[in-house]
Image (cartoon, rainbow, N blue to C red; front, side):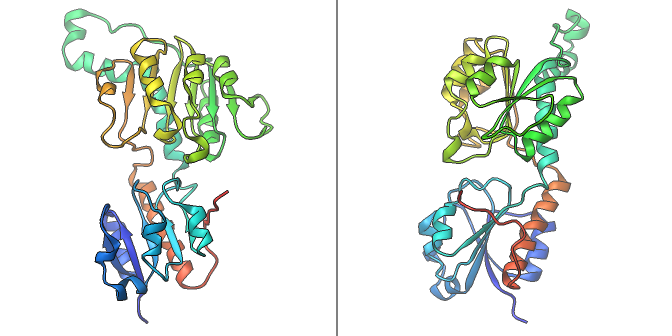
Length: 316
């Protein structure tokens, strides 16, 4: 049986690339390449994309492959894919939800702990010899019992909230509707949410609907003693307003795994001592990445076998 042709974006680890090549004829496509550099016969043969990375996948790229029927995304977020256009052309889109929920939630809570207790700074205090020469590390802050707001109560937001219950936190949340969570306080306005809490955890999905949703007004509402943690998308925060708040100490601190212009982030972040920065690695564990790759391949296999897609997404 002839293996079907797919276009593969970015690089994959061996545990993904080897089974992918076993089941498909894989045509690598580097970011920024011109699809018309691929000969017309090959472009006609390619019926699916194994999409990975943070580059934009829009109409021009889709239209270059006349028989494209599926874009299988590696990752839960698909805001860089023009899903509405894809579906208007009869092209399905899938993602890899659920398998990364726990790791993202774990890192989000870990970042909050690291920021609030100064864990990275304390480690450097020991390594530099200042503990022996200068004495105790400056006192940090208690997490247990504080009020925490979750902006976006989807899979990841709920997983974060459940973990924070173990710290006896007072949980508040913002979402498009009341999720009827006993003991958790619902807010239909992000500014009101920020005013009510000490910590704001950002777990909303990316895309135009959430562009800049954590605005200057929301950041200011958190106040001088507030902390902000973002494990969603860099686009969800007004980054200029955040940097100004951190520079002026009108916000106590921020822990960020996502940014504008990744990986070339705003250099002003490097000058701040009230931030904890991560390289967009919330799903960056061996176990989760293997599961993501498997689900991506399972969606590709279902498509070529004419079976229902496992995790389809829609433009809504």
